[in-house]
Image 1 (cartoon, helix red, strand yellow):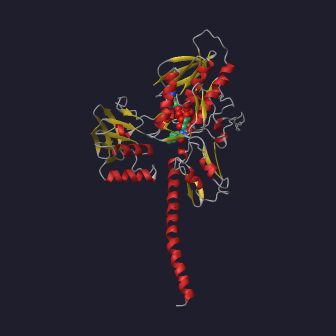
Image 2 (cartoon, rainbow, N blue to C red):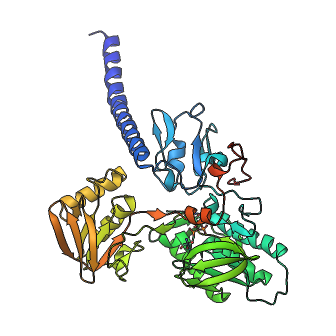
Image 3 (cartoon, rainbow, N blue to C red):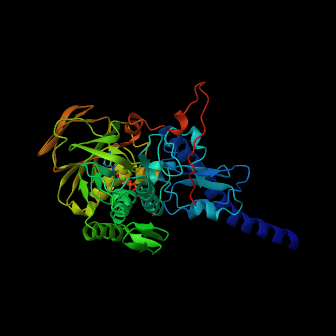
Length: 450
Ligand SMILES: Cc1cc2nc3c(=O)[nH]c(=O)nc-3n(C[C@H](O)[C@H](O)[C@H](O)COP(=O)(O)OP(=O)(O)OC[C@H]3O[C@@H](n4cnc5c(N)ncnc54)[C@H](O)[C@@H]3O)c2cc1C
C-alpha cells in the first residue's frame, strides 16, 4: 500500500475514533433535550414563574454557555442548535446565563408585561391599581433575595412619606402580609420609621428560603437590611440565612403573627379591612409580600387536618423508621419520595392519579424507577387518597380500596398562586388591563433585573 494511502487511512480511523463517539453523544443529548422540551411544553413547565430567559434564536450560536452558567440547573438546554427554555419555573433570576452568553442572544426579564396576566400592574412606587395597596418582592414578578429586601425597604420609605403622623386610633399604618425577605425587610423599615405595623404569615418566618433543600447554597449580592446592616457575602447556606432572619426578629422584636393567612383586603370607609384566618384588622396601607409559590393545594379529604399531614419536606433526614406516604407525581413529590426512601428503616409509598411519572424530569424519573425496582418505594399509580386516619391512609386504586399503615403524609400537588385574591381586591394585571374599546392599556411596570 502506498505510504500516502496508509497515512490517510490512519487519519480517517483516528478521526472516526474521536469524532464519531462525540457525534453520537451530541446527537443523543440533542434528542434528550428535545424530548424534555416537548414534555415541559405538555406539562406547562416551560412557562415562567416570574422572570424568564428570553432567547433570540437569530443571534444564538448554540454554544451552551448559558446552560452551564445556570446554578439552578435544568432551566435551559440546547435544542436543535439553539438555546431553549426547558423548565422556566426553576428560573430564579440570577442572570448568570445572560452574562455568560458571548453574543448577547439572551436577556433575563419579564418580557412585555402587557401580555402577562400573572404580573400585577405596579407604579414605580410599588403601588397596585388600588391606592394604598402595595406589592413587593417576588409577587411583583422578579425573584432574588436582594430585590425582595431592597423593595421591602423602599416601599416603607414611600408609605412613611405619605402617611400622616401622630394618629390616635386603632388603625395600623401598614399591615404586611408575608414574612419572607421582602416582608421582613418592610417590617424593619416600619420599625425604623416609627410606623404602627403588623406582619402576618400563613407559615413561618423566612419565606421561600424555608423551603430550599437542606444546606442549599444561596447566592446573593450585597444588600442592606434596615436596622441590621449589610448582607455582604456572595453565598450563604439556607440555614445561615434562616438564622439571620430569626435573630433579626428576636433582636428587633418584630411584631409577626405566624400561622395566620391573609384572605382578603378591601377598601372600607377610608381604611383597608383585612380579613385573615384569625380575625380582622384595619390599616391605612397594605404591603403584599406573598411571593409566588402560593398556598399549597389540598386534597380536601377527611383527616387532612391531622398534624401528621404536611405540604412540604424540609429535611428528609428527620424521618427514619416510619411508614410514609407521598402524594403527587411531579418533581417535588418524586424528590421527596426518593429522599425519604434513602433514610434508614423507612417504608415509602407514592400515590399519583396519573399512569406514569411523565410530568417529572428524566433524572427524577430514573431515580424513582430505580428505587421502585429495588422495592424501596411502592408506587400506586391511578390511585386517590380517600381518607387519612391517625395510623393509616385509605386509598382507591385500580384493584379497589386499600388501607396502608402510615405515620406521615406529604401532599405535594402544587400550589394555588394568590392571583385570585389580588383580583378580588381590585388589583389589575398586565394581560387584563383594557381600554373602554377593548384595546390594551399600557402597563406601568418598570421591572428590570438591574
Ligand atoms: C429553589 C429556589 C432557589 C433559589 N435560590 C436563590 C438564590 O440562590 N439566590 C436568591 O437571591 N434567590 C433565590 N431564590 C429566589 C428567592 O428565594 C425569592 O426570590 C425570595 O425568597 C422572594 O422573597 P419574597 O419575600 O418576595 O417571597 P417569599 O420568600 O416567597 O415569601 C413569601 C411569604 O408569604 C407567605 N404567604 C403567602 N401567601 C400568604 C397569605 N395568603 N397569607 C399570609 N402569608 C402568605 C409565605 O408563607 C411566605 O413566607 C430561589 C428560589 C427557589 C424556589
